[in-house]
Amino acid sequence: MLEMSFGVTQRLPWFSTQALAVSASLLAVCAGLGLGLGASSADADEVEYTNYYFSDNGNNTVATSAFSLSKTVWQKTVVMLDVELDQTKVPPLDAVTGASRPPRQSGSDFRKNRGQIIGGVEQGLGENTKLSASYYFSQEVDYASQSLVGGLTQDFFQKNFTVSLKAQYTLDSVGEITADGSIVNRFKETHQASIVLSQILSPTTILRVGGDGMRNHGYLSDPYRKVAHPRADNPLLNDTLAERHPTMRFRQAAWGELSQYLTRMEASVVLNYRYYWDDWGVKSHTASLKLNKYITPDWIFSPEYRYYEQTAANFGDYAAGDSKAYDAADYKLQAFSSNNVGAGITCFLRTFGRKHPDWDFLTNSSVAVLYFRYFNDTSPSNFSANVVEGRMKFSF
Image 1: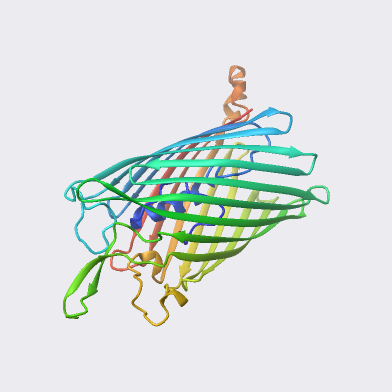
Image 2: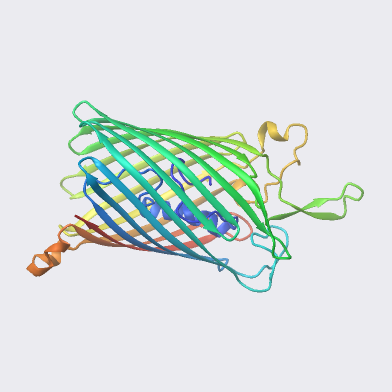
């Protein structure tokens, strides 16, 4: 999706609804996607449990529970495991055009579960090199996905400069539940690659820049979205047809991030900007600002704001000679801007261990609660959504 950085697979399932598509972007902002696909492990072994809840003004909801583990099994060999379950509810259909759920039993809520598992390994080679590899699989009633990811991280100049490379191949089966309950599956594949350069500019300043690219091939439409097209024999009448998109899409992005620790304020500021473009004619700008402020040595308050703006798709050369060859009913292919405002509280549980020696096992643990509000200017709905996240992390 357009508002999500490439090189990271979304934690939520693929959905065509406006609400569920943007929820993955919001959760990426909220949690950094946990381990992610092929993500590097933390310096210490770690266990994390996370719950998310998403709801929007269209009464779509997603509830997610996730467990992740990063464990050193032999010297510089780290294994990673992530298990997740999503429960989704989409309300009854109130129209045909733009519908984003199966028409079967259209008068009742559409509910489904999705399971995901990621397994990976990271191997240190010497003091400055890490290799990683992982496999991802997810399954739901009308969608299946699997990915292979490989990564290389290399430190230079006494670890002051770091280069991270990542490549990913994803194979999807895009399903459609038909009116009689049978499922039609369609092929989709994705190739992705990214590079990240990190430079320590001073003891309190870090600069990161990166670029990524993605090639989508196969069925790139929404199998449930129907679009009205004027009939060739009578333009005053419409035929309701399945959404049509090209079967190829090349997507790129470049970004930069500056992290600055403010010693006198006991706080850090993170500034980020990202520019995206693709061969469907979509271009976007994303700017974000995040503050992490120590309220006490064990409590951090983290307000955050992000602004996003994009142009509309014209499908470029794919639609040459016929501007109506493809459909842009999906709001993510229209010109719009969005805002994401939120805040979080993190508590390091060592604050309780100081008063209770028996709770010493909490020394390297933390809990966090975050809330985010997303809204955009798409018409006619002016879509908005809420995300609440609770996270508990144990390092050992």
